[in-house]
Structures are given as C-alpha cells and as structure tokens.
Image (cartoon, rainbow, N blue to C red; front, side, top):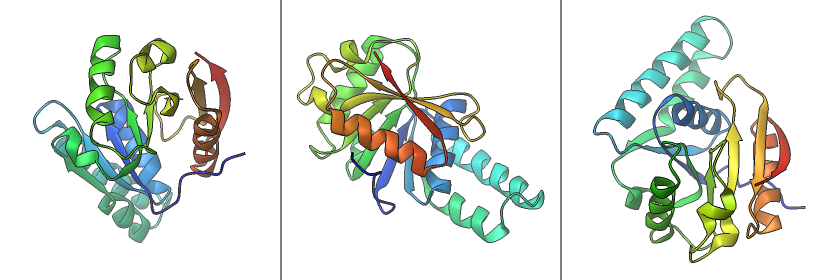
Length: 188
C-alpha cells in the first residue's frame, strides 16, 4: 500500500470558497505548503486573510499555539493562475459542481503539473470516471471528498473512477489519514 504524500510536498487547492479554504487549512495544518487559487479576482487572497483570522481565533481559544497558528497561516499563499500550481504534488479542486468546468480545469492543470502529480476533485455528485475521460493521464485523477466544514468533519471519501490507478487512491487514503481524517474508499 502506498504512503501519504511527503510532508514537504506542495498542495494546491483550486476554489477558495468554504470547502476549498477548509481543505487548504487541513493541508497547511498537516505541514504542507499550500497554494490557493480561485477564478474570482481577489477571492483567494481574501480566503487566506480569513484563514489567518480563523487560526488566530483557534490559538486564542487554546486549540493550537500562537506559533502553530502563525506557521500554518504562513504556509498558505494565494496564487493567480493554474500555472502557479506547477510544483504541486497534489491538486484538490473544489470548484462549482459542473462537469464541463471541472474537466476544463483538469485539462489546464494537466498541462502544467508534473506527470506524477495527483489531481483530485472534491465533487460529491459528479462521476470521477467522466471527469477523467479524455485526459492525458486519467489514472492520476480521483475523488477526495471532504465534508463541510472540512477542518472539523473527520470523514473523507477517496473515490476511484474506472481509470484511477489503485496506487493513486491508496496515496490519497494514506494522505487523508496522515491529515488526521478518517478516509474511506468509494467507487465513482
């Protein structure tokens, strides 16, 4: 069975709404450098500011140290384009539930990330098989479905499409567990 992505690996999160920001927080709290991207101008930067406030509030309540809050916030940066995600080992998209939009984003990401980078979707209703269809490397596409709010809810579904490489699903499962989540395998 595969292990989790390396702690030094960069995680990119696409979509800075409640789910994307929550996933970014989870990854950053696990020690990853996170690049947060949103198609709406300024949305990622706003989410980074809100996350810093959330982390400060957690420190004020004694749920984490002030040093950990600052360090976690410092690991999350807003970026402006898919090309800014080029160095990511894992990309998690949490954009609108629209297959065409998700496929367009996956194609843009496939053009810029390394061939061994994992492309995960937080979708809860769309087919991972359909999302991966026609991609250059469909085996690296899987679902990584967090529940809302991502930092608090323990369950994460690791969803395999028909083309998903089993090692990719295993890596996502191990990564979710390393992030303190309770992963379960699911079929698309």
